[in-house]
Image (cartoon, rainbow, N blue to C red; front, top):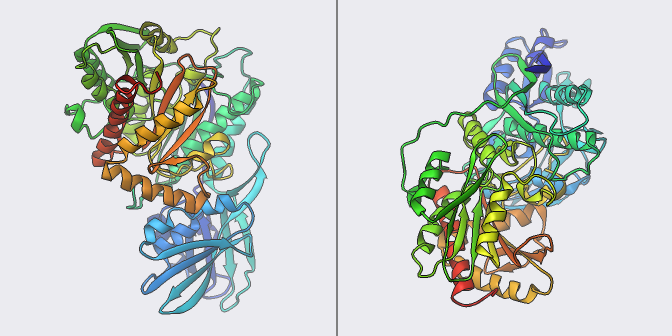
Length: 579
């Protein structure tokens, strides 16, 4: 093991309390904003009051949402209008999410405000308007790859008694920010070898306080630790892309497996960054569930049992870390199909949906298809581990393979490794249609320290927008692609639970990130476009908000995935669409 960084940081909340031992004037007000939960902030307020201060300590993360959760009296309020800081309006609009869902049936609207530092809130109560300002602590700085970013930060203000003008008003770099900066600096400062992968596993272990709160509307939550995981993972990918001279966002670069492990701590904030060899993961045992009633992601062993039960001719590949990628080929006379899932291993509903659909397709006379229920088996093992620590986080560190790349993005001349199973499935089936099951975050996706929104192509996934479909096709096939999507969505939307999910999430998405540009067929967003790189003429990609859900919400997810495969197969096989 090579240790790149081991450090401790004073908890910012403790530092603020330690600095304020005795008020300069009796009743002096201390206001602060930190990345801590309500209980920790209230405890610090109590200590300061015991020393003769007035104290109000708020959340630096999503301050407007926290203001409504903790301070604003909503009794009798019929409407809320929030003036957003005019600078980077899309980012502040997202930061206000999901107020319409939380405050329903109160009407919530957004307008452009007049100040860069505040949300200007108007409450309409009993026919009269009340006005208040909610401070938004931010600082502008160059990020890890030199881009300018406006990101949440800590802040401290103090006021003499009865004075509206603070005698201290400044940003406070918190332990939350300092940990991120220290990790980035340690990685940048290390002498990396010329070739890739640079390491087997880059492990970042952080113990830190923070916000962890479920909101009770769909799967929405507030989690600063999840935000730190996302910031560290994607920022480090970008750092290594820069080191390797590759464009930011490239998906075929192979630095190795980056694993941020962000856990709670009650005292000092701690961090250790180290290079470690791959260690085989031991699966936790679960009470077995029937596929159709599964309330959680399957274990790798359960997937293996279901694949064996399906039968057919086995084929597959071996992953970087030595795990089997299991494929099954059902030889028949019908036109060929390929069904795959788990390309991105933290997208949890696809494997069950694929297996359930394959069990039914197997019963067709002349059935002819190939199935790979879990393509990215190394990522899936990591996701299993990460869920043990934070069951409901989205865990994008498990998205890519152990090499740090996307299976689908591998160049044809490079070693295919896991992707060899997909190529074999396409070869055996001679498929004209590949159904590729995916998912995306079931709750808001933020990168708090690098501009808040995920950035780049990922920004469209910042908020859930229901179950949607992507159809990629070869040149000249746009007309049948649109006709197919019209027919497929008409069949899927008859599920009232799916229709309700899509209507609510699309409305919330558009309220915060603006109108959806893609066509919406029968209440389902459809992205249709040409792709010359794919082998079959048509590739249908599902996107269900499933990172990471359980119970009835998870059952709806994998049932929708199954229904998509079955309806698409029927349209393709029985009605000749896309033939």
